[in-house]
Image (cartoon, rainbow over all chains, first blue to last red):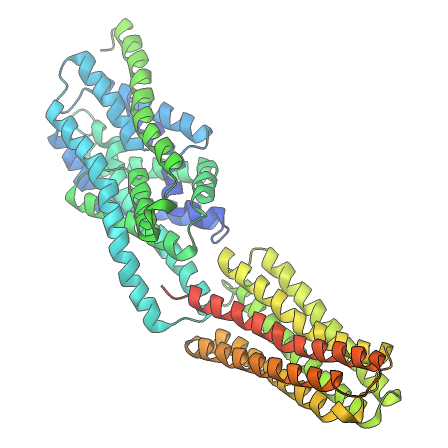
Length: 312
Length: 215
């Protein structure tokens, strides 16, 4: 059971990095105080994981389970990668870090299931595209409602602040519901954790990461997204939350980072393709390739260390 | 709830006080100008100028207090920017009123009978422009649906002021007044006309703020 420690570490690193996807904009532009966001985010992550996180855990159970020691290697490699990225204030996808390590272990064990990998990569494409479509739909639907109300400056301000808090909390709920499986899913089994304990431990670890180390990346995402106005920021966060929640209901763990990037691209499409910063997009795509690569490299080192000590 | 939005409620209350102070400033300005017309330069006019100056200073202090509260991260960043811009534009109106009174006093201006009624008419049009832009501000905060109609009214009043200005200037320069008086009167006309110009600029800003809150 000591192997679960790596899952806790992964949960902590996920919390420290992915909280930025749901509250980064609001915190960095001082719309919401950091501690308000961190407490709300932690609470809703735990709630989401406990109420709806078990679907994702079930998905992990249905996949061919890996031994606990290998799960440890995968979780530790992913956690180390994400923590490094958080240290550099870079928002990255925990799912991609996990997949990068899993693929490397699969290659070394010579049991890599390419069809599953294709499905995962399709999800990596489906999440941002889905989030972009949800963004466009929400932008017009919510916009029509706002035009009907015709808010005054102060009503608009109050309404948007509340909306950002509610959408952020919903995003945190979806994050917990969807991503807890990434953290402790591989440790569920007859020799490991029960689904309930996996969701509880995983969600507490994520919450701890949010409370203790999410400030740096929140600032980065917020500053990068500050070019969005409050309304488009709210729509992006809401679209991300809806997309990730839908995947949580289906039981597919996906990346909140990919969802928020898709949502922001959706706003870019609405405002005119020329408004999309191609350089930033290039960096994000590079990150999507770099994160699994770094995680795979860390897993490679850990794998041979475990192999040398005959733990695998 | 009040606790949660206390900074915003404070801003709303301070803005209310600021605009009331600007109204008082314009009432003082109107009174001072009437005194100047009826009694010319003298103690009564001087007292009215001082009174208007004090009210304008109080409005300035309030504006600075609002700006500091806004810089202290009250409201969303875009609302902050909009309000700061609105304050900057609106503040030029009481400043202009004060400048006109100081010009009348320092330059010991005497309006010739020939154009006295025209100057008063021009002043009335410009005062109306102020009260219209003030109404536009009220609508922006309390009745946004009609804000754009209010800003159009300001625009129309500014055009009316421009026409009046041109007519008075033509009358001044086709008269037998001496060149010094002509130039002084020209400056006075342009100064008074500045009120509606600034009111129009403020109204433009108000219109943009209202439009920005439509999707």
